[in-house]
Image (cartoon, rainbow, N blue to C red; front, side, top):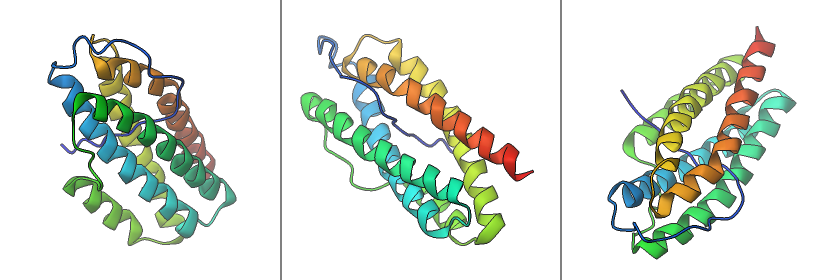
Length: 162
């Protein structure tokens, strides 16, 4: 099963780096950054290919939130001495190509379905990461409200299409 990662908006990163050597922190941040890049691209795609104003607006919100989240994730990555990924992973690229190949109502349905699946997975992962005591925990915790908001927006837009 493919797992995609995303970071949403939120307040400060704060917190201690006392557990910066915990491998789950650096790996989480690398996945989060790759997810941010993937979601920025998906948001841009929704703005280009969406037919409804609501999908275009959701795409713009995704792009803006992920740009901001990527800036915060980069701060944590630098503190941990991690390299900053600049592109999505292979699975995320494949998902993008799949959704990008569609137009009209088919595009919107596939885009929203993707957003629901991805955000549900990320909420689970970020909840787990937020419970740890490492440098990434504060970052994960700060993103959860936006993850939930994006999930709920995707749900609402999907219901409206029926």
